[in-house]
Length: 334
Image 1 (cartoon, rainbow, N blue to C red):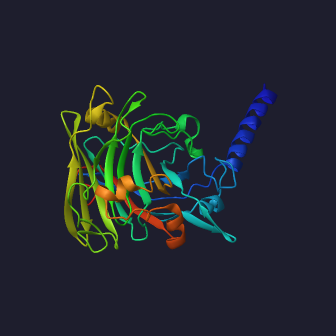
Image 2: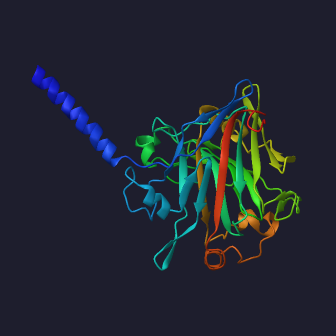
Image 3: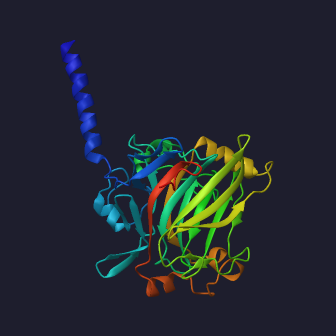
């Protein structure tokens, strides 16, 4: 019996050792969960690269700081910086990273935001036309359907990976912005979504360098998921810059409940809990025209091509910091 027990202990110890030797070096990122009564409490969170990160040399689940650097990802305290292009020798690699918020239990942080708010400080000053710094929510499984600590299990309303509810809290560059709900009813998703874009709504001088929200400088973005009777009633956007609160717009309708779930379906997903995904990317096909050109923004045709961005803005990057979520009104106190 002693021999068998010793063998069991040895096997367990070797398994733990193997896990330690192959565990990923997740960059720490301080975040806060807030209540109106107790204030904001620091969370022991980190970030993890998506498992399909092209320029990371190590395999998912065993990546090091060098892999995160190769993908243009760095953290410092409460700040996360994502760079689209990363120099490697004489080459400029289009890393275009995507990361997820990870808890200290090795699972994705499930943000339950129905009747709550989410705030983040952003710096879009070096994000040009055609580029998209995206800060959004996906109804991924907490365990990533296998190994969240290795960045598995991505899904969205475009049905990449698989189909799931998606809330695009903030898609933006220095010239244009939109927030968009993409509810899903099973595999039937609202791929176009219900969007609020200030430029499209007629606020032509609202967002940009030197405008109402001055994107040449950092500012705070607050998104409130207002609820009534346990159902999502509206998604409201506010900003704070230089101590001044700026009211923007809201979404109060999101298509057919019977077809894709509508606003109620989006609210149900927020109530169950969604995973925070953060990325920077561009698109050769549409050149982000749905976000920042024509009726959607002031960018010129062709200005947002990836080749133009790489040539004119090789250092393009976005910074997200001071991420907080909790009771409405609690994340920006003090």
